[in-house]
Length: 441
Image (cartoon, rainbow, N blue to C red):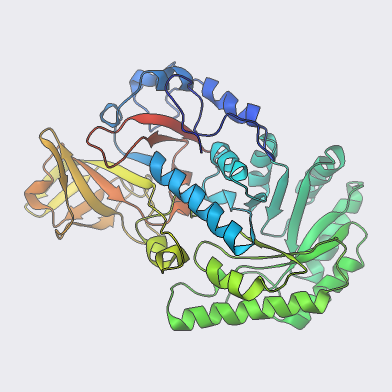
C-alpha cells in the first residue's frame, strides 16, 4: 500500500490503476474541499483541499479531540500479511467492505490481490458502484424491488460487472425472480445458497432445506446457481474448544451442501464462501479440500485489526502466522478531574466503538511528554454519549492531557467518522498526518 505523501496530496491508496475499482475516482478524493462536515479536522483546514492540507504536513498535535486515527505502518503490515496468508493457503479473499466503507482502502485491498469486495446491503452496493468496483459479493439477500431494478440495470449496462447475492428460502427466490422479471432484467443474477445454523443468523437451517432452495433457483430464469455460502461467526464468539467445534461442524455441513449440488451449478467454477475475521483458518482447513470450487473468505476487520475482540480471537493471534497489528486508535482529552480517581474524557459513544469492549487507555500525552499507562490499573469504566469515565490513572491523567485509547471492534469504529487521519507512526513522540481516509456510511 502506498502512503499519501504531503507533496502529492493524494488519498491513502495507491495512485496506480488497479483491477476492479476506478482509481481515478479514488484519486479525485484528494481534491475534496475540507470544511465543518469533517469532525476529525481542525478549523485551520477549512477551505483547503485534501491535497493542500496534507502538503502542510500537519501533526497529531494540530488535531482536536475527540479523534480517531489509523496507523500507516500497521495498515501496510496487515494488508500484506493477510494477502500473503491467503496466497499460501490457496484461497481467495473478498474482504468485507462494510467494515471501513472507504474506497481508498478497498482499492488497496484489491491491488494487493483481493478477489473482490463483499458488502452487506443496497446502500453499500451503490457506494461501491459509484467508485467502479466491478466484483461484488452481497453477503445478504436483496429483496427490495427498486433495488433489484437498479441492480438489473447495472448488470445489463456493464458486462464487466460480476455480482453474486445470497438466498436462503424459496420465498426469497420467488420475490427476486418476480422483481427482476418486472425490471426486464437481461442478465441472470448469480446467487449463492446460504446455509445457517440453529440460533444463528440467516440461512437455511438444514442441508436438505438448502438443497430445496437451490432447486428453486434452478427453476428461476432470472437467477443462476453459482455456489454456496454462509457465516460461521454468528454461531460462536470465542476461540474456546466448544466454539471451534461448533464452527467446524457448521463448515462440514456447508461442504456437504456443496457436494450435494455438484453437477447442478450454473457457473463454470462454483464459489464456496465463509470466513469472517475470527475463524478463517478453520474455514481453510474444512473447505480447501473442495478443489472443484473457488473457496472465498470474507474477513474485513483484519486491515484495521484492534486492541480488543479481534486481538484475542484472530487466527493470526492464536499462532497461525504473523500476528496482525492494531491500526485504530482513539484520542480523547481530559476535560474534568472531579474525583481523585476519576477523569472525564471528551470522547464517548458517538466517537468510539463499545459493543465488543470498552476502549483501552494506553498512553497519556501532556506538555511534558508521553507517558505509558501499561502496567497501571487505568481503565475506561463506562461511556456516555460524549464522555468516557477513566479510572485507575489518578494524577497521571490531569486536566488537559490527551489519552490514547486502544479500541475494540473496527466494524463499529469507522462508521462514526467521515474522514479519518492516517498517522505515519502512532507510537512516535510527534506523529504526522500522511493521509485522510474518506468513508461513506
